[in-house]
Length: 109
Ligand SMILES: [Zn+2]
Ligand SMILES: [Zn+2]
Image (cartoon, rainbow, N blue to C red; front, side):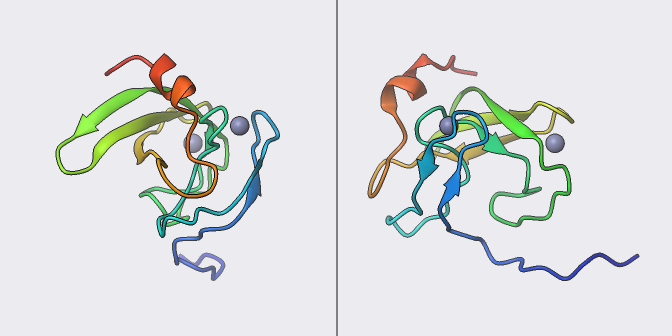
């Protein structure tokens, strides 16, 4: 079992949103960003946040919010292809924080 070598480092790079085509800058708050701050959609590239270990690559829809003790609010993403669900931290500071109106539109899970 071999797979192509690739960086397992959590990447923090600018990207273009697959859902709304917004240009998303890299975060400046020192954390890793994996979803669009405008529409909150993500991509299924991680098995665990930041590991880039998934080969799925399908868009992930924001389906709701959870509050985790010590971690604050998290948005739950569900993959539109395989159904994988993953909570992710919100970006609240620095360049292009998550749109709070979009965040608050989500149901609490
Ligand atoms: Zn977007
Ligand atoms: Zn998937």
